[in-house]
Length: 638
Ligand code: CU
Ligand code: CU
Image (cartoon, rainbow, N blue to C red; front, side):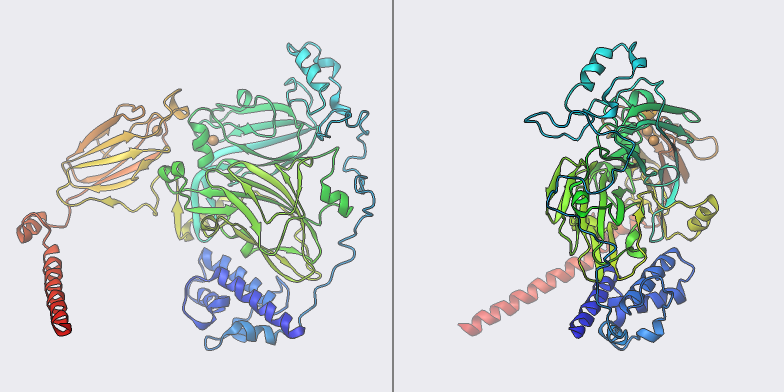
């Protein structure tokens, strides 16, 4: 029994190691100890080394039965390159602690009467409903029969008071509309800007931010709360917001917020669930700002109806994980076409592999899952877990038992309730759309007896001070941006003699962002963005305008969808340019004489490049030889 456990533990360690393996060939790579040591020695000051070291330390401790965070990482002591370290390290770890349920963690309620709530209501001051469920009608879990179903007297002059009164009398929640001078129960402010964020693995993201991060802050309210949502624009272009938890106009109040200004909306959170909020300045800028990183999670906790699992277990979850899956793009074309360079949970590549979420066997865990997208579908799954209950969009009235995954398109959400089995080990969270998972959306819940639980995980992206960001940017392996050239964007070069080159404008980005051409080449920009209504930031109407840094200016007219504009570059130099309506869109034209001598190539082989000649000759000789061999074989058989 013990040996089996040891082997399983070893297998677990190897599996985690394999999860992180980066293709290095040393014998110990299955658990990455060697690679960790190598990083420690050679690249100690890099971001990847720091993150990776933490992950390796955690794995090593876990494997050796020391628990996470013990600081007992001693690579030399547990592994060398000549042996397969995983099983042996496990054997060295001594007796494996048998998993056991913490009786204080799981107390099953009496289930004879499952419909009777077994826990104290979250809001004991709320008076019970007066009406209950109408005969023959399902309980929609809404506000009817609840304290806030009465229309406040001060709303009597509202121009739509008749509609309001009708809605408050319906057997399902009213809309979120409240007069804008209504006193809020809770107030939240988010700050929208453009800038950089660290997204892990040495990668800096230069895009659009909410409160300085991607994703923005978690907002949690209770069903029935009057919510004030303030949006500040501290950026340099218009921003705004769309709040999915509001069943009413928000763009009217939060759209088109100019730099330095702010907007405000007041609404009632009438329907429990897990919602997305995102930047929404208006028009074409709405999809663009979402693609560029401005979004977050807002949760409306049910007040009058419990989640099924909570009723049965008789207590709140031991661990609550707010998990937001989302994507990062390195140019506007990829963003529009859904070719994500990275996917993450909560803003950082492999965030919860590096900092696993700690649980105890038997824990009751709830995940508030939101797939922001903005393009990819998630089939969220946890290896080793079958759901106890999932609730569609987080509504407690939509409880489904069982299931291996949840399907979530962009902005789809679920509340997921499950138990950690009575065993120690790591449970891997991922989207089973495994191509996406391999781009960074993988995390671990690690169960250990007596673990210090990670009680709450919030979806806010990692936040760093300006000083920390300066240091991170200095050490970064690469910087990516969806709309401006970075060190990631190598110049696209053309064959010598090419005198006409096309650049697309798509997804508020030039594509390619950087080109290298010879003097005398004409560049033609074509606008592939389709949204040609409105103007400025709110439209997909673009141009290309720049100079050589002296007095040589160039530019195209404003281009609607499908329109083109050209400029011929005669002088060598580096020409940086922007789109005037979207000044964060940057492109670069490098004009320089190619160092390949085209005349020499032409002389070597007529119209074909000279380097093709030996290849063609070689291929011809090989065909001749094989024909000869084949005929010999046929003759011999004959
Ligand atoms: Cu924005
Ligand atoms: Cu533009």
